[in-house]
Length: 146
Image 1 (tube, one colour):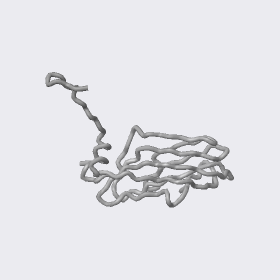
Image 2: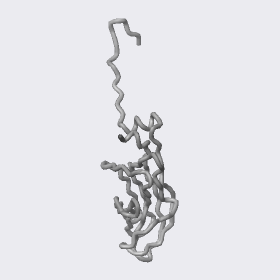
Image 3: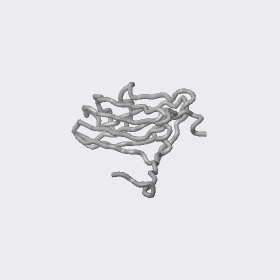
Image 4: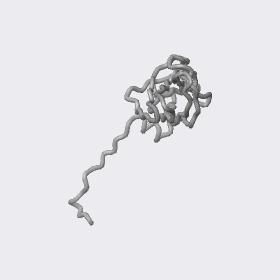
């Protein structure tokens, strides 16, 4: 199809979020805590680290934001996972038996340089199984948050 000089297409408006802009311009970097991990439940009130590979320390000059959480539970009972920051749980994610959970977070908080972010698990005593995880973080240059 050809256009004459009097015809034109409407202008295209491209919209992106601030996070998309920071990622596109390489002022932010995606980071992931992910994998498949076996577990043994110690009790529903005994929240502990699932695996040392599921920890992330925010580097100097950066801030980190948790953007989504995905988990699958291959066991026969409910369990819950929590994101902790410096040892304090800040988000809880229950996952039913032989089920999965995907949570895109609507409230995103800044975690400063030096913060230790970990995935922890609690499950009924004696329950064993496997958890599949994919946790998405964004690491942003600290000066971008000013």
